[in-house]
Image (tube, rainbow, N blue to C red; front, top):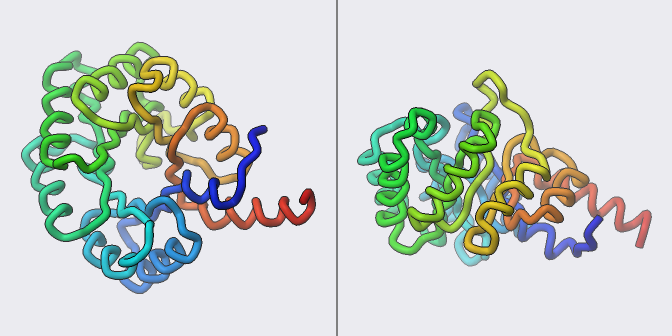
Length: 233
């Protein structure tokens, strides 16, 4: 298992709250908590980006906004408008866009690339992560999705939305990360997300090559790290 400090660990984590039922009070508490733990970012829906900008002002915590979430099937033009709105209404942001999975599985690779390219262009240099939804893809499709994301100019391949509302969902594994890294090498980074709940999962995934982890359990992961550090100083 890798050796890592708490300061290093928190900078791998995008603390996540994409719940459709989240209230403003809950989001304020979530954002303040993320600021306290100094996570790398907070993964949120676009509507919360202005609030996040206010609460996280002066911190290093990035505002990671979900675009086309959770299915990725909205028209490209709407994804672009979402990105533009986010850039106009927030600061220090990143974009996590959901790939159009039906287009990929239909073999319409040029259309998939154009969809991603449009979002990358609209992001104006802001990092873009392409969520390819690994549980729904074959190994060959993972390779194709990763390479298309690279060709389209995205900076990251992201494993999953974490959305459990479809048949075949499963947690992201270290093997998923290793496989994607074997495809993209050092040309792209990998963000792992979906069912990552424990410290041991997080460390295995980091060791496999992930540069970022999306999880709603960031606080628990850090607290578990602190407890272990006291037991094994």
